[in-house]
Length: 162
Image (cartoon, rainbow, N blue to C red):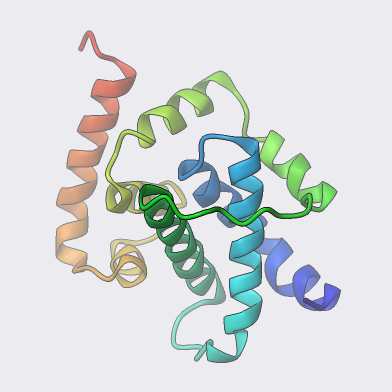
């Protein structure tokens, strides 16, 4: 992967990739594997980007697809890809998300179904219902109801006493 492509087309969106990969992993090693695989898939599929949606939407879609594919492989017992270490700026960015409240939120998000995780991550990124529907392949009318239900579930995980 060319460093120009990485610097211009991936690194500005590293926050998106980090958040999605973090929501679908339980260890730093897995996080690094997922992150690198997402970057590789973005690079491989760059010629397929048809500019019908924003580049960030494309990044979300690829990130979610890679993470969901890895989860399926893990459930089926397939081996994970072992990767080299991440660039220093990505490691620094991933550490920036570590606070008690954020860790509590990610812990709660990990209890959600794979699709609900995707929906709430996109919602937290302030994506519109239409954008969320486009990314996950759903209907925008259903997104609002789904988000309400997800918030209720998260609240129960974070505040079990009520």
